Amino acid sequence: MYNKYAMKKIKISIIMPIYKVPIALLQDSLHSALNQSIENFEIICVLDGLNFKVLKFLKEKQIMAKE
Image (cartoon, rainbow, N blue to C red; front, side, top):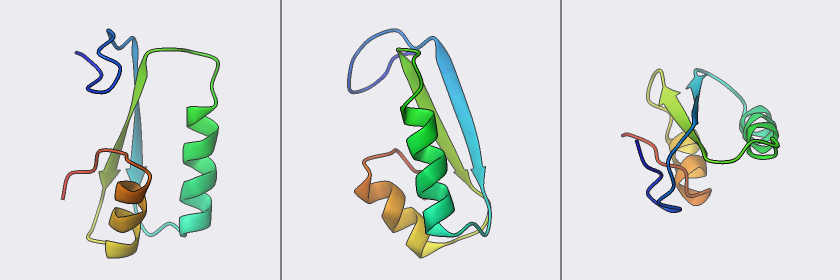
């Protein structure tokens, strides 16, 4: 598995399910995950239900989100 942006081998995948969460809480969670000391990881956000605000937020943060 390869990170599309860094083209480095990914060591860890963080899977983050998202269901009816305020944007502020999602932002804090992503910030926490992105500031880990590990390198070469990916964050996979799984939307459980259609939420256009969350989808827009994820796209603005350049995080891959499957529509």
